[in-house]
Length: 238
Ligand code: ADP
Ligand code: MG
Image (cartoon, rainbow, N blue to C red; front, top):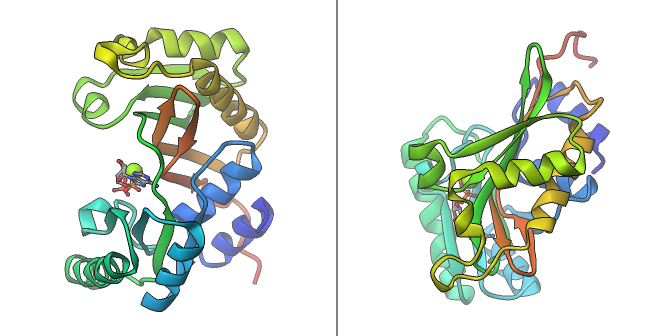
């Protein structure tokens, strides 16, 4: 589906939060690499999608009412065969229904397990005076506890993207700290620039959260994404 089709559907459903699948489709179309993610509505469909992608795979709860999937017991990674997929499918369903009994569940999304990398985050928020602001930081606990993030006002130029990456305190982790792979920073820079180009002139996008992005020596890929739309100013068309 195109951006306009996805936006149109969300508006008709009076939603401002796009699903992981919708968000990744939009980002892919903007030239940002994401793990291809497809919806399974049954356990059998999850198994056949997994076989088509190739193992190992990741299963996640797909519900328009659940945005923090891990909190719902809704993410199972590194599933290596059909049996593991079936067990994970049932486990995710049960735990999501137990923790969020009111949630409408569309199914379970299936995607390939991304090759491990350094987890970073990228995103966009809107500032009332500056407009779209891009964000870059290290993923996981480092962001939450240390708030080690850098910001840049859109539209970014190449040097701005490079500066944002150079600004974070934990940047050594991107430079092969203690025998880890060095991250290809130019890939992260171009991802930031594409994100900036995408949000520029699109006031209907309120917020983008790419968390995490796996950064490696051979590229970078988004494994989870969420896009939030601005509240519509026009009445919703039937
Ligand atoms: P949440 O909605 O809780 O943020 P995520 O989709 O971010 O759920 O998944 C939780 C964690 O699982 C991620 O931070 C990442 O470490 C891991 N993960 C998710 N998708 C993948 C994937 N395709 N490949 C490898 N690891 C993944
Ligand atoms: Mg996430």
